[in-house]
Length: 470
Ligand code: BGP
Image (cartoon, rainbow, N blue to C red; front, side, top):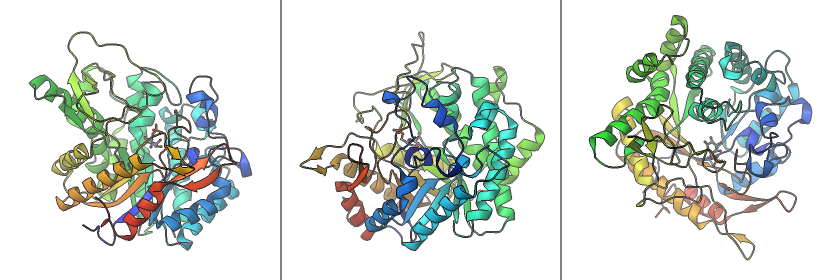
């Protein structure tokens, strides 16, 4: 039971969730710097002003990752460190920071896996309409090109965007992320299209540079399954997969949007404003896209709505993923089931659904190259006699890594696994009490780092290439 030598064992973070230093060395403000200051938007008003101060402590953090044997570190670049105004003026100190971070990884033989956009948008762009404004697409291309040119000699894996569905959904349907707009499906679909157009242009631009690296995008992977085998619920799952999966995977991998969703959107006057040239660019980029990143936490169990739609639950704890809400078009709702296991935040734990979903993906898209770019357990870790005993996390990652291996054995082409997260960090809406890391950060003691039980466990998994998984 060993993973291939070129399979990457990694772990991930994102700039806003770890860096802190929100105004240090010329960084511009971002949408999240503002949004988290609005009362009631985050758990106890937590924000990333300091986060875990990775900006100033990255050397210590990378040394710990190296000690764990991490083969690859997925992190994101904060656009506003490099372009404080979103475009135009360049802040050299921002470039220096990422050069140092990349060099530090390479010093230990850790492969840097870089996300260009993990939700923190320079504030001036947010104020000018965010992803609804096509100028943001142009600014993104300028930023992406700078990153390719500045870092592409050492970075051979670029992710253009992280989880479009999440920032579009929470930003324009649930109102829980910036810009905090509720129930506006027209804008929601427009944002997604603009982001995919930006992705396509970035992929084409990257390939022109001949840097001989890989480029792709990370999507949420939350395959939908019917709660039972009734025809209504099988239909509900098909509908959910079309809107939540195909709408996000088809344009990247096949170069066009799924006809089923296009038809539904045009019936309801919700089609994005797109041009033939934009659609042609998306088509042209698809075969150049090297991989798809999958962020898998849980599947969806869905049921067709009959009669009463029911209220939309929008608490901080559940707006990021626990079941119970109707789809925006009121066709189906996600359901918490009695016979399934859930985390403390009501996210289902299901390695089996992971395998089934991967099979589903293979049957639709063939043997595309995949990386699991996020997977992990959000928990409040027990501390016993001073030791962080995150045994539940060990079980979670163990079982999901076994699922990855099983999928590989069944012919799914997976080249790496990134646990979320390398180190405890800020959960966007749920503060610091929702932990994911292999390394604990003590917020009562000067952000001191401490290795958890899972740190030693993952170290053994990596060293044995998975042979120690049970
Ligand atoms: C993903 C995001 C990550 C991370 C993770 C856990 O959607 O890409 O940035 O936050 O979810 O989410 P949460 O912190 O809400 O538990």
